[in-house]
Amino acid sequence: QVQLVDSGGGLVQAGGSLRLSCEFSGGIFDAYVMAWYRQIPGTQRERVARFTSAGNTDVADSVKGRFTISRDNDKNMVYLQMNNLKPGDTGVYYCNAVDRSSGIRTYWGQGTQVTVSS
Image (cartoon, rainbow, N blue to C red; front, side, top):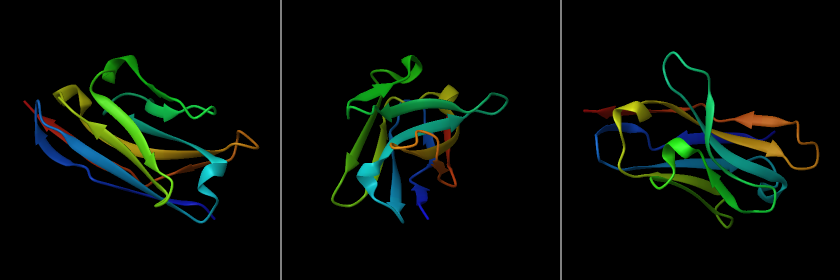
């Protein structure tokens, strides 16, 4: 069973940086398309960054130029580097894995809280 463990959240002032980590286990890392989502209070969960099926990266317009997704295949880790954080980035961030072969089987991390103070 695939498990994702999210970490790295915290409290940071506006303009600061955080790096979130997602540890993948219980499956073949390359068999999954990885992404980061967030849920801002009062809104639906939204995708902020992902690896495409071709292995490229893609980030939401709201975080473009500030957030970067990366991965370490040797360590089965996915990262989200977040720079120039804004109060509007406050929320719970979740790692996501979707099985490439089915495109349906989906797993989520437990989430990590990011709070940006003004």
